[in-house]
Length: 337
Ligand code: TXA
Ligand code: MG
Image (cartoon, rainbow, N blue to C red; front, side, top):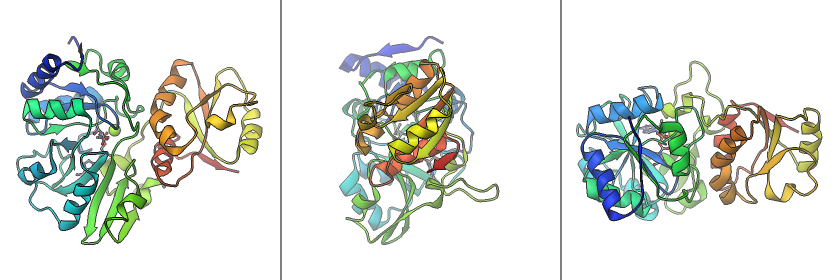
């Protein structure tokens, strides 16, 4: 199939919305990462998303709506805490898991009786939702297992020939996917996937925020994942990634033992001066690192890296989201010095 590249003019967005209404899959920009969007209520269309990504059928899709008040149409119950959180963090990089009703087919929810609801803030994405009139199911627009796409070009790299169109809405602002949370009880939230809405942010709205064990730890063979996505290998470039948790001096000494043509280091901006080996910097603070991490991993593949040593970010605030993506791209191979 030919994949059209669309711009963000009203006419082109109408075209994208028309394709979605007609059961096609379209690459769409959001403020977190690009998504692969289709009508969440159309099983046939949703199956095309799973096929294009090569995604396991039990990994549920997030449903994107224009306004949180629309969540009533697709869920059976919205706890008061969910409403308080939505008031503060929607629209934005934030997904709430709620009990679904039968307007959301089990194909979309990966067989679960819950659905992740997100209200995106990106104006292009919002326009596409409004023009299509559909609830839009959208996972990140990468091939399953690869780093998430933060530009239309990344989506084309993975999806050319597999989907109807990609809408170019510029580079994604945050660069890592939304924070995914479940409501544990009337005063407690469980973070299933960290993002740019942080634990600290949520503590302003509720008494207790649990960070799920699987965010920083590999699940054992028999452990049940609170979120199916936690079971799968993720975000990996072709290169073998190793995360090194140390200061820059120790990092440099460690990497020196493996130095070679196809060996690269992914370090902080402030580390670059005098760093003696092949390297790329991915930002100076957590927000910048979130913005750059996936595109840096893709860039390292283009540079021909076979082994990548990554200087581990802080786990504070937004850093937890960056650390979570990197530890998965490293297959949990972490060296602590
Ligand atoms: O920022 C984002 O969330 C992006 C953009 C496109 O909106 N979307 C995204 O979708 O990252 P995806 O499918 O790549 O990741 C969604 C994650 C998966 O790990 C999935 O297992 C989890 O959220 N998830 C979705 N629905 C769930 C549910 N009902 N219960 C538990 N986890 C769920
Ligand atoms: Mg994804």
